[in-house]
Image 1: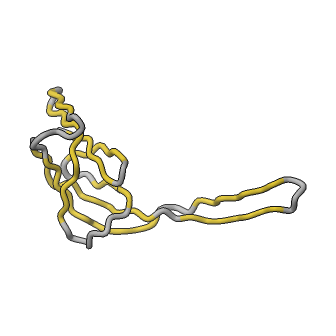
Image 2 (image 1 turned 45 degrees about the horizontal axis):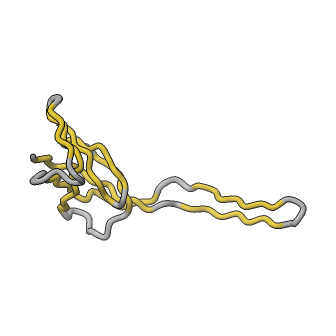
Length: 102
């Protein structure tokens, strides 16, 4: 059984006991949260929500917070001596999927 859940404007495929990285949440480590369920598949039986599946619940626990790998943003304009170098690390929250219920 798996579900497509929504968090932070993005969609993630989740199964029980999976650990997924989502956009940073304000919850503390150890908190239990509920995610919006958009689709549930159970052995080929697919239920699609409009936009959410009615009565479906996906419980997750906050495992940790962190930052992703650094990316370099380099802006350059030729012949103008205009250069700007920036780094960025996107914050994330790791969630452990505890249960998915229809």
